[in-house]
Each structure stands twice: as C-alpha cells, then as structure tokens.
Image 1 (cartoon, rainbow over the protein chains, first blue to last red):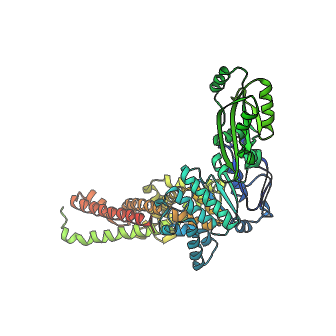
Image 2 (image 1 turned 90 degrees about the vertical axis):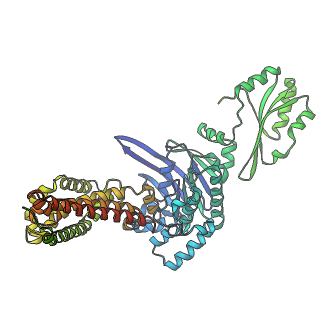
Image 3 (image 1 turned 90 degrees about the horizontal axis):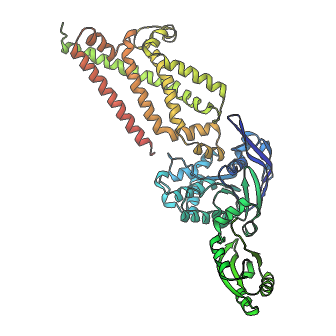
Length: 342
Length: 220
C-alpha cells in the first residue's frame, strides 16, 4: 500500500547538512497498522510527511497504492492527497470553525454539495462519538475530543490511508488508550491502512501489527510486534522494549542472591504463546533435585499472543541444575543471567 | 480676537465631516491595496506556501522604505504623484492620496503579522487535505486570522485619523487643520479643545467598534 524505496531527505541549515531520512526502504501492507518508533530527531516525522509529499524526498521513490507520488502533477497530487487522511499531535483544527465545519472542511475544499457534506459529517461525528458537540468550537473541547474531531476530519474524504503523526503524544494515558481504540475501530470499519509514528512504545505495543525502529534517519530494525518485542536485535530497540516490559534485575539483587546460595544459577525463562500455560516450575521441582526461587515474573499480551518472562534461581548441584535447564529448554527459551546491567 | 462659537459651529461640523470622509476613503483604498500586499508578504516569504526569496526581498524592502518616511514629508514629496492621480494638489481628495500611500504599507505589515499568527500546523493540515494555495489563503489563513485582522485594522484606522490631522498642509481640511489654524496659530483655546475632544470621541468610537467586531468575529 505504501512503499518507501531508498527514500532520502537532506536539509541544509547554516551550511550544515542534516540527513533526516537516510535510504529508507519500507513496505506497508494494505489494512495493517504499521508503527515507526524513534526518539525525537530520528527522522520519523520527516518520513511520514514524505508519504503525502508535505516533504519532498531528494532521492528514492514513494509508491502509494501503485502510484509513484513524485511523478504526479500538482492537480493530481491534490486528488491523491484526498485519499490520504492525516492526524496530528496538536490536532491542527481550525479554531474559527465549529466541530461540524472542521469535519466538513476537506469536503468543502473538494467542492462537495452541502447536503452530502451534512450527511457525511453527521455520520462521522456519530462514529467518533461527538454528535452532541457538532456546534462547539475546538477551544471548548478536551484534547481527546479534539483528536476525535481530527480523526473524523481525516476520514471525511474516504481515505485509503491514515497517517498518524504522534497522534497520542499530547494526550494522557487514559485518553491515549481511548483514541487507540478508536483507531482500531477505524481500521475495522473502513479497512484503512494506518501508518503511525510515535516515540511511545506502549502505543506501538497496543495497536500495531508491525513496527520499524528509526535512528539517525535509518531504519535499524523492522518486524512484527511479537518478534521485535520478544527478541529485539538492536540496543535502541531493546531500550524501547524496556519501556514496556522491564525484566532487568538490579545488580544488588543478583549479588545478594548469589551470596546466599553457593553454586546456584539465575536464569531467565521466556515463554511464548502455548508454553505460558505449562506448570513448568513445579515440574522442575518434582523431577529434579533442584530448588527454585522465583525472583521476577511478568506476562504481557503482544498481538493477542501471551508473552511471559520469568527469572528464577535454581539451587542444587551443578549436574542437577544442568539437567533441569535441559528439561526447561524443551518448553521455553533459557538465558543465564550473570551480570544484568546492559 | 474672540470667535463667536455660535457662528463658528458650522465650520466645526464641516471639518468633522471632512475628517470622516478623508479617513473613510483613505481606509477603504488602503485596505484594497494593503490587504493583498500583506497576504503576498506572507505567502511569498521563503519557505511558505508560494515562497519566493527575490520577490519577497523586493516587496519587503519597498514596504520598509515607504514606512520609514515621516508622513509630513511624504505629504509634500509625492505632490506630483497626487496631481497625477486626482488632478489636483489641494483639498480633501488631494489629502487622501498621501494618506493611502502612508497607510497601505502600514496595513500590509499589520495584515502580515496577523496572518503569521496562524499556526503552521493548521496550514500543513489543509495542505494534507489537498487544499489549493488560494483555498489555503481564503479558507484557512484569512478566516483563522480574522479576529486579529480586525484589531490590527482598527489600529491602522486610528493611525489614519492621526495622520489626517496633517492634511491641512495641502488644504485637506478636517478637524486637525482647524485645530492648527485656529487653536494653535490664533490661540483660540476653545476651538483647540473642541476639535481635540471631537478627535478623542472619534478614536474612542473606532476603537470600541473594532474591539467589538473582533470579539464577535471569534465566534461565527
């Protein structure tokens, strides 16, 4: 649906060249929710603006639904832009217009008749749950309500793609989650492809199917949410994953545990999907001459699949511990925790 | 010495009408010229909608040049131009020409500053929706800045009222002329006070009208 092919965008400021987007290749499928995460300045904001050419890349190609965006004439670009909705961190609503007229604005620009505008806007306000606010002005709304207006406005021209530029970054966690629910509903009801950029890993975890991690203009890692969260490859990715699931033991705890039991081993067990419902630890205790001391455990849901991690101390003779680990490895992945401070 | 106020009243009434005429016509022509210039200043600003570095630099320079000439000098300096436009160099009509030359660049600047207040994010959102440049100007920039535009135009109007007092130099008449000719040069303190009071009333009226319009236009 959206293809970035070798996209590069460079700015020149004060004789300094900044490569905001550096040879990015990404392919976003029809109907998926694709997230791009990165710290500020990573280039994700420039990247998303390349889709509808608010920023023109100096190299590479942007293919949207089979159309080579950079080859479009100005009038053609205007028509294609109507099929790409966009919502923003600061909502960017017209302060001088009511909610009704904000939502109807893209239709007004497109020259749609008043009657049709009315029907469409009523329907969209119903969809985002703001029917009673039609005659209000943006300044009378809360942040979450403003973003709902933004979403309704973005949907007015029946787009095939929705671009979300840090759409929840100005909202509190509760409002964020209600907006994410709404975006999920948008995808389900309108079968829209959603590309979102954010610096909030919980948002990615909550809603995306796939994610790309950007750093210094480059995509450094890409994959399904499950793969990236359960097995991050890059340090930056690990740091982001940590913001959602922190399973690092403090060094003081490790030292303390090691000091208490001679010859014990601390291991991290990672459970994926079905293995989360096996009583593994009690099996280990029954089958081997090993005591288990559970130090930390958590389980989260990634794309509707459970993903668990457990840190246990195995106490016993080294041969028994090795046998126990072998047994565990048949059910879950095991990683020894020695010094945990990465 | 001593002017009989009872017989002098008609002159004051005439002068008031002249002032109102001068200000009204100058304002209308200044708006006709100044608003488009202000819009052009904003959209041709480098990096903006129709950014054009060279064009912007020239227009910006010309406006700065006109804005830096004191009105009293402008009044005299453009006499040949005034003759060309209205065919005469004295009278109310002759005063309107320099007033417009004075006020139009002023209004252009004020319009520019109003339009620059519109959030770039809102303009970007309109672009993303597929708005054409003229739609961005007339459907986004101007309506979003409307309330601020009204306030700034009010400031310009008060400025024109002030400048029109100097129109006496070209026989433009008006309250300012009367104040100088009688109140100042002939030491008729009463005339001075009356004319100044009338100017105060006019300015007050214009300012509160502007404030009111600006306030109501925030919610339409």
